[in-house]
Image (cartoon, rainbow, N blue to C red; front, side, top):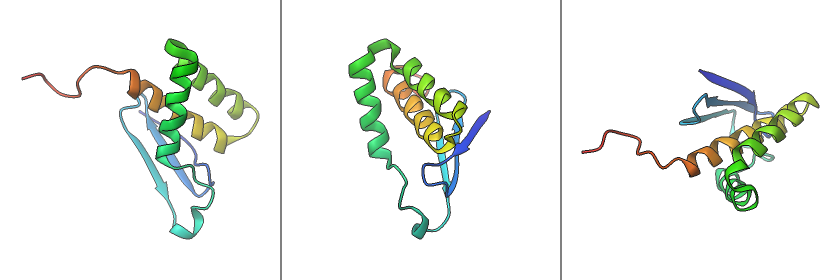
Length: 100
């Protein structure tokens, strides 16, 4: 199941799988990318959240996304959904495939 939210630049749709195992960003042309937050910045924020909140980083990120969505900031909410998924991926120590 994918959740959708507006991207940071309002130029596309961010899709985040329920388990955050995949993140897809569909964007228009490169001329509309001026306000997009890069993936490296998402991962930087995720790392900072882990340092500050530890085990509660994913919860804190999700709360921020929800607050922004409730206030009508769909672009900000989409960014924080991406951060939440990055945090979950960073703390996930389960290998993606079968062990040999």
